[in-house]
Image 1 (tube, one colour):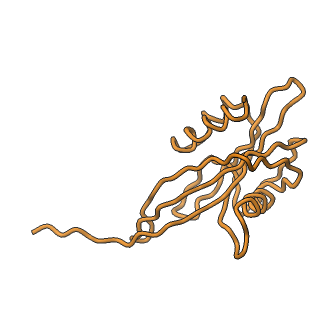
Image 2 (tube, one colour):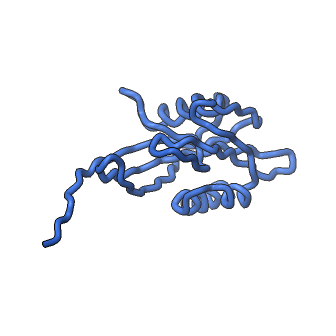
Length: 152
């Protein structure tokens, strides 16, 4: 006799910003962070993101998380298009269906300072270098769409 464990399914949603800087040569540089995972004892390369607080709309959450994780406050947030990534994972016996929505934001300078409690390190890179640095394949695919948007 074979038993299958039935697990609960939950949804989770986060919002973030992909910070973009246009340098003196007219080339784009993108900020990526090496973030500590809240699940397990690991870290990964991604863009600043996080969960909403009560009463926040998507863009408010994205901007607050950007400030908390990188100290970036000067930004031209582009809201006409967003980039969604969906995935699932198992945590504490529950299946979590996660959606992360990112907005592109242009910054006037490359000042950024990581929050030591959440960010192991941060770095500005060319789009090609960013794609190599990102940890997860679904983030790389999302970034490919972002690059087309930025170039367009």
